[in-house]
Length: 512
Image (cartoon, rainbow, N blue to C red):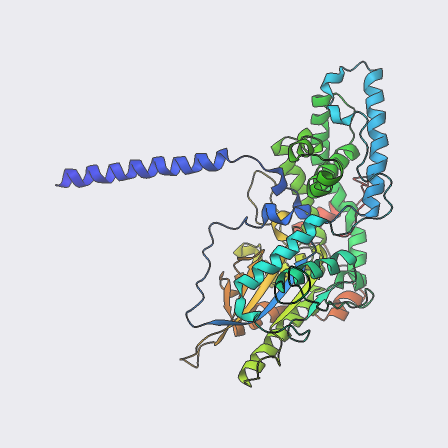
């Protein structure tokens, strides 16, 4: 009997071993998808379902009902901006120089990818850019439909701008995203056209005074910080760009420079994200497009280039400096105020149609990234504790090490944070009646300020997540003269080492 039990145990162990091995092999054999490695210019559909598999979401307690929803979303996929279009026009001329040089050196032309010969920017001659493209419209339209399906009881009332206020920045791609979302959210609820659409309002603050959604544009100290640090960020990228440039030169024989590598990487990202434009205008297929600039790089090179982009987002928009997210305090307080109003309306038993049920906002990566940081997302426990103590964080680790901070999941095109306020039966009056759940890109995500749960008692949310930031006033953070701090942390030492400005990567930066 004892031998049978031992034998059974070993058989089970062997089966478990081979089962685990097969799962690991399946994961390893999963094809590399460059669309999931484009940092903050990733399309929403390619990355929205990438989530932490180790995290088990909370079950919303029985009897709890959502009474309010906050949405902070980035605009959908856009075309390149005017600055980028001009840079790509110049890059076309640069490729011609490289081909001429290769011919003068009698380089065998079969080594050179065929698409480089005579390449012209698809946006050549365009004088405008940065607008929401068709794919971006679809991303927000479908998101609106899914949000309504997830929370039907929040969107069961007749539309009124006081019940469903929709706010966007004055940048056209943000307001267009708000319109696309609203068309999905309120589809089949009106009388306009075959889709039974209805009209709705989208309001905006002036760019010069919008400290809720465009706080980065109004914050003088942030602008100064960014201007000072951009050369250091470029310097930080140089070793990776130099390493990949040397490999490209050996691989293709062309005398690529660091700047050429940066331009090719941008071309790879932009062509994939704007693929629908190519499909319509140039009748190109997915395979044709990804086999151009992107195919110059190996998967390991793509992950390194992605990491350099993620470093930039981390340092200039994320946890790299506290001013990046502290300037977003007005947005966090706006979210909190909407929740408190919803609780008050419930307690006063306000009649239906007389109170707000959702506050919907559409902005930029410079909005979504700091807001995610204010919530304490994408951190390890030790990192969250450092943030609470206002200590600097280490940079995201270099591949192949794993990291939580990835621009493609933090703020892809149409990336979003949804905060749902639940009202629950309170049999025990000592326990909270209201809970906040955070969804990032429509998936529950842990909040370390709430013990690593995605579902947080409202009082704890206020005390542990919102209150620590409220000791910093927006005006002080953004307008008070900043005294230089003595060096101390490793992070600041890295910057001091890098600060001597070099040419670096001078491909023009623009707003996301």
